[in-house]
Image (cartoon, rainbow, N blue to C red; front, side, top):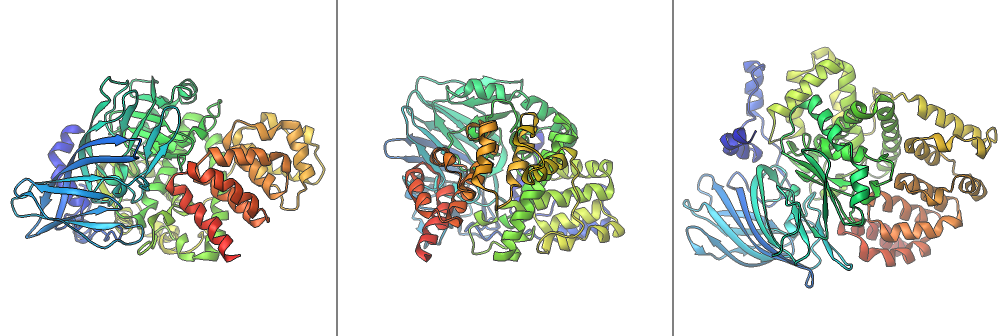
Length: 628
């Protein structure tokens, strides 16, 4: 893989910028080859960069991390490729201080920073000539840079979250998923702390606090990642390991022992793993997502450490991104479903291979439940946001990160599998990853690829691509999910609600977390707090260590005024920054007349949240307060 990459880097980079057609596959007809060659990748509206004029190909990054000032200062040395008669190269920056710019053929040069736009930041224009092959940008990040969270403590911690367009807040870059580059880095951090990146990583501290990194495969800027902290290392397999703070390393090492099995299962499904190692870093609880698929080093929330390995589907998801997303990448954020829908599908196949069809079908059932609820909510607000192909021009791409890309995308791919049969589908999908490795894909190109390489005319009619990709809501031919265990949970739920089954007779202690989650999330709105008290007395749910179950329980407790759980809800909201949990819990307080409680908790919690989380909560809570 490394040799292939070195030979084809220029071609891959040009393809990523939309300058060259996709590499042809042998089985295509001459007509289909010509059709794909003539297709142009969509314009990325979320970058100022003009990669058809000048594009980056490699980054050498020298930087230092200062916890006292909360600033990253450094120099980004970019190798560039100039096309035609371009007189400048444009980078994306947001609230960066640019100290100086140099080029390899002109020394120190005058640069120009354009006006700022909401969430996009500013364009940095650097003059170049026909002889310019390298530009060097010396800069500083802002203490409140949106990608960075500086976690206070006896030993501080820093982590980045670059997706979707936040890389530009901590490093000048051409911040588009369609532009790939390789990188080397040298990072100075305080002594006693370990630095890690989305690259080849150290496994132990060094005395100087200087760490060097290398990423030989080309990646887009949203997969640039850095973490610095008191971090320990524990090996799991020949290609897998976990990193975590010393207090969590033993628990993490136990929890994720099956990472190797997942990696083997993934390769058996869709081809060789292209990134060398697959390691996992457990971040502080303030991390706003479940996981982030940074190449070679997934960033993950500690909320998936349950003590019983029950929440490892998230690891399967981030591992699957090593193919869908990291290897074949959405060309723009309008095409986000090509990253996430494929990944949820791949995640389900990994879970089926490792844990069995019964487990994967329970997960699929919960996905369908969440999808239908979110579709209903979004349809009331903006039906276009239920399309797989998004419409994010002039909008923050973060608005596209909903269940639509993930779960509607998953059910679309599941429909394709069921339409053509698993054997044909798996051959197609493996070839899709192989032939498009280190390239980008947009929705229109994928539709053409699909109709050319998989679906017959009759199958195209059966699937109805337009309804799935460009239509609102959920198509009528959405695949059904069958889970006997979930069906039995629903029967027990109804019997308990109707008084036909006692609390003591519920098989709670025999249920997996998916079954407990299903039971709790299907409780009716008119249920009394006394009934929740029965459940809590019998099963001590308020004290559960499974955060998915706890979240569902706290949501019901707030909805039904079960006050004994309020302290746990406050503790959870103050200490956990995962947006998936925060938004519904604050929303249910807002909707049930508990705004005073919500704002009091949020005042304590907000300083602990990443910008990705607090921006959403600000809109939810402060705008609601203003409107009232």
